[in-house]
Amino acid sequence: MKKFLALILSLAMVFALVACGGEKTDDSQNSDGDASSDSPVSITLATGGTSGTYYAVGGVMQTILNDKLTLSTLNVESTGASVANVNMITDGEAQMAILQSDVINYAHEGTNSFDGAPETNALWVAGIYNETVQILAKPGINSVSDLKGKTVCVGDVGSGTEINAWQVLSAAGLSKDDVNAVNGSFQDGVDQLKDGKIDAAFTVAGAPTTAIVDYATTNTINLVSLSDEELAAIQEAYPFLIRDDLAAGTYTGQDKDVTCVAIQATLVASEDLSEDVVYELLKAMFDNKDALTEGHAKFGFLDPKTACSGATVTLHPGAEKYYKEVGVL
Picture 1 (cartoon, rainbow, N blue to C red):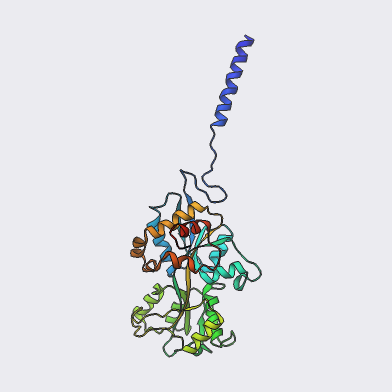
Picture 2: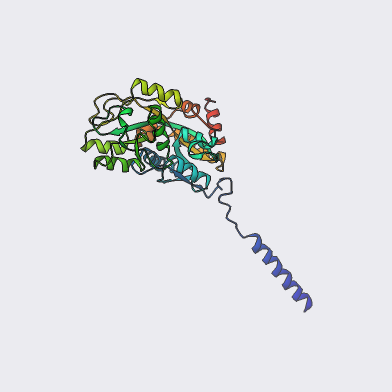
């Protein structure tokens, strides 16, 4: 009888050990963003306001690329744009973002909106297209200096647009005492311009910008063109702001070229995302450039050489691997 009980106890222990060994743990994504074979990494892609180019570009990426990716899935989120996007990556609320090339530089250096508090988690993946600093104004305002004494929407508080707006205004000799600055999204600025509450609004976005396209359908469009003196002063003070002319006809009713400055719309990724995940996504972007361009014309500017040559911060290892593979690094 004792032998029989001992046998029963031994079998029970064996079954218990097998059961414990068969338990599964959820290792679908580890702390550095690696995806398991059966569970892709969910990537929140921080963009910008719903009326801006970032959000539209991000939406096309999600639509086209999610069918091509095996290691990750993209989920686009509307945000307060560049500075907010850096904060989201730092806080782990987003894993990738589209933002201005100058803002990611400020984040790593701890200047401007990041003064004394650098944020270095976001790494360069690809420069996608130029972002033009556009000034939409009431008729009769023909230069930056004409904004003296006027009410101007300079973008959301702490946004990349606000930074660039003050760079342009200061280079033209205008201080915060010279302009009645108000904050808000560019859509807010356009709405207030329509209602006669403000005199001008800044946006930093790829042209044509949706909000300006809509404005031009029912309003007389007036985009401020930089004078030669203003352009020279801006570029002397801020060399990363390159000349970028808007050709006549970019918007309905725009009958002449408009001289502007621009930075680069940049895709960045958290350093916590694995090399393989970022490499696959970047490769999928270039492999599907035509489909992306059909979805949004800005992808037509996507080029491996320019995508990495303008990097103002460290390349993500996955991006570095891709650019070396295609021979541009």
